[in-house]
Amino acid sequence: METTQTTQAAPEWRAVADEIWAIIRENAQGFKELRESYKELRESHKELRESQMATDKQMKATDKRFGYLSNRFGEMVEYMIMPNLVEKFDELGFIFTKANRSIIKDKEHDIFTEVDALLENGDKVMAVEIKTKPDISDINYHIERMEKLRKYADLRGDKRIYLGAVAGVVFNDSEKGYALKQGFYVVEPSGETFKITEPKDPCRPREW
Image (tube, rainbow, N blue to C red; front, side, top):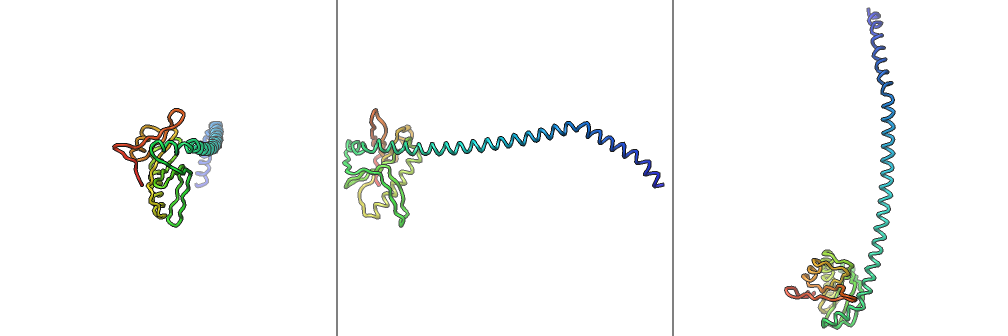
């Protein structure tokens, strides 16, 4: 009895198998095209990754060159402004006898800062921050710098009055107003030279 059932079922399974193979043959081309599409997609992703890596590398190199040029341009601005700063501040009643770039280092008291131009005499010190285009963060950082200079001066018994100024080749009105409000002198281009604006009422030159 069992043998008869198995013999009768065999043709049915062969029919199913034939149908399955027929479906596979009919869709073989589609499967092949799908595999090709997947392969092309993988190649496309690979090229995209390589292109992105090349772009990232180029951007890093550009950023590095731009940073170098910005630093060099900043140095050039300092050398252009520095020689005339003393003369311009003389016109405002200051008589500075010394002008230089200064680096303050005091590891013991954790004080480190750089000053683009430090103008000095026996009574006053003017610390000038020089930027191509000053922004609010530059001005805020100069306030922190002035506090460090005051602390350093006190540690050395320097009782002179410390004042601050911000110089820029391009000064937006908002940044200029903010600098004056903080009590800084503002140094900016004027014709073939530059001018210094003193903070006045309601602001006053801030002393540290």
